[in-house]
Amino acid sequence: MVEVQIDPSNGQKIPDFVLVIFGICTTLLVTVHLMALMISTCILPNIEAVSNVHNVNAVQESPHEKMRWSIEVAWVCSTGLGILLFLAEIAILSWVKFLNVSKNAAIASTVIVIPAGILFIAFSLVFYKKLIAHKYERHSEGLREIETLATALDTSDLNNV
Image (tube, rainbow, N blue to C red; front, side, top):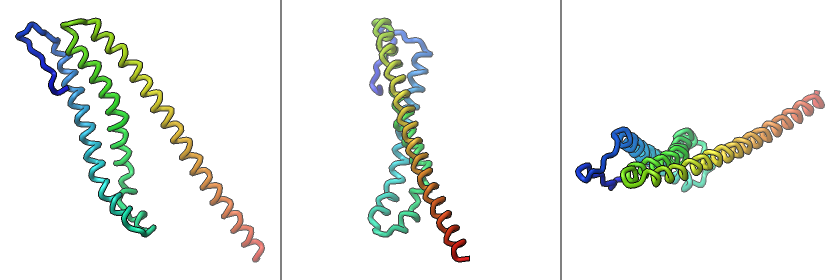
């Protein structure tokens, strides 16, 4: 992507809007991955510090629990948005490279990338739905346990009175 050679003196004329879209997509792709890398790099020492301490209370004191949103942003950026941008980058790159050689090749590349993007989005939604269902079930089970304990405490209080 970085070494795309466009030589206008060769008669290779690519429309400006295609080059602008390619530049924007490339910049966003690199920026998103660098941001995710930076967040991950900043969080890693905290996780390693906690993993080396054999004290359960240290886990609650660790800043990585408070930085959960940062971890999720890094994951969404790198995995979700990054892959979509990369697929778009491939499609745009095919237009930049093949437009003057074979428009059909550029169209074919785009036609292949679109279903891949749709499959990726569908998989992501199904995976996220299962993840949320698991979290919901886990929290519901925790609430049922608390309710059972509260009922047991109320019953023992009534028996003591």
